Image (cartoon, rainbow, N blue to C red; front, side, top):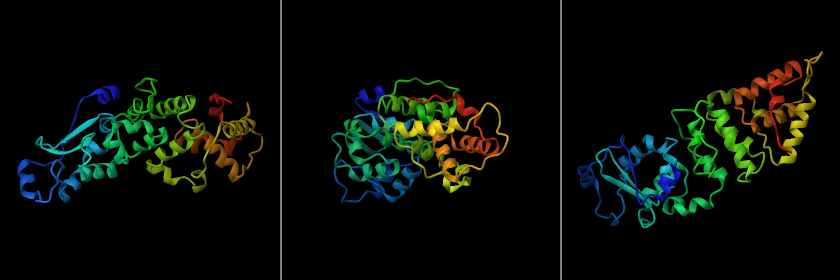
Length: 277
């Protein structure tokens, strides 16, 4: 789908929840409007800010990939453009850039998306929503050039794990940065804010450190529960949390596994995880 948008001569973005007619334009448009640029009244800016189109997961590629996008209101009135040849439409593009976190230079020229890091592209989707939970990751496949295919029913956690593992494997993101991106997405979950602050601030960087974390976890994982309950240090708990998150588990799973570790001295599910040295 991303390739369809990228190869399209023009893409029409129909914002069905945005009310803007020709009569409205004629009544409100100022005499100082620059020829060829879309008029942006305060009411239009407010409606655009609350439009579902700006917050849906799948519309991200509609915004970024095409060379030219024409934005239309419910009444099929043109409200703005993005793409090559419309550099004078700065007011509309600036508003869209502020709402979507996509830089204005990328909106003006879709070829610039190739200069954007994989991490930044993933962050564009953080505030977006999808009907199916795994779609928040599937909608990034084309944008990130990660041809791993959708597998509906696997859930968001596995989709995230597959995508980030692929990006690490091809070098699009540094090994271990998956923990940071995972945490940023999980912060959208209200339950995340119930977790101790010490579990939120670790940054896993590099395969050597990741392997050390895994070895530390394996050293405390036993076939049988510990005879005596150990009291792990806050640093150990924090490091184990970073390891679990790096493997694609969400924050709820991570805290559950840490509680298991504190209570029994083992994390049973962690034995099933494979990490490349």
